[in-house]
Length: 406
Image (tube, rainbow, N blue to C red; front, top):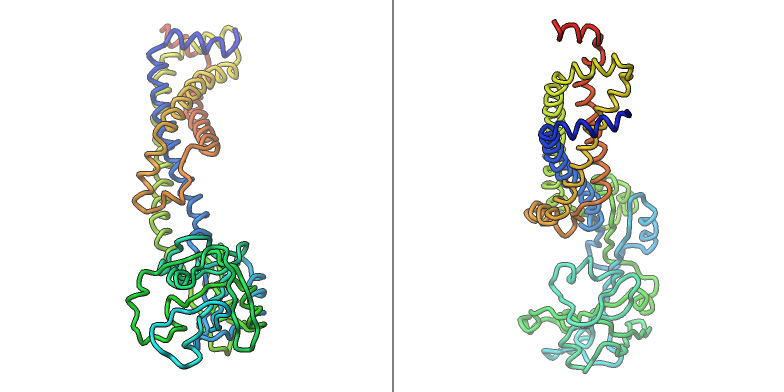
């Protein structure tokens, strides 16, 4: 009779013991799977949060002019761990085929001009990112989506709609035409002081892409550059690499990683606690299952000695004991997976909702969690079975039988 046949017959004879051992494995598997899901989800969230929290270094011209050299942008992109940059430039221009919003009579040149601001991406920096302005219709300006964003009051005054052309005239006589791709609103337009020059009013703030801005002003530089990184932990090192590029210039350098640290702190706590819990679960499982198997193996000492006397190898007996435990462990894994699949979403959401990380956390049961459970569970079974059967296999079967008969 082969070892797996003996293992099956033992299940049939010792149903109560098998059920009790299965419950131990089921509780252990469920706890390991939950702990693994929390730990690995927190670790994955921590990694993905590097890019999603917008950790960056901001270079800004102290005079508010476009004095940051254009060549710096390409040099910053070559630095390690820099994922993208957002160039920002600002200048006044004259309307070519529309009227600005004018609240008071102003005979100066700025009274009939507007302020155009050029961005690579209006969603991640500036007034839109700070939610001072809200896009009512259309699409934002991005690296792959150019266009012009105008205020809703300016659009209402001139009858603009999405897709209409807009022409600007620079002080140097250059002209540029673009297409309106978005209309935004602030909510405080009518609360502005009437003494504000028309060019600086919210209604006359127009956002454009860099291609249109360069058509008007050529090789003029930038007023600000945001340098984004995928490695927030080494933000200070990146700043040291950037500082030599602007040494001696009137440029402020600031870092923006507050959101990252606010979200990283609770994540680190979750990682530490879940790691400790996982270690305690494994140690406890090894101790409890080993003690349980040791008690049962003592009642099987005579059985094992008889098998050895009949010529069954000790290796076959070891495989039988392993088959018994691994079979029950495999059934417990199936039960743990079913339970975790049903309740994992609510459990993970309730855990990460406190830290406002549920959106970033990709919470759910995955193959990685299952493989981790199989690996850790196999280690627990191997150690527990080995501890429980080693003394029996090392003993001389003749001495064992004679002691029992005596």
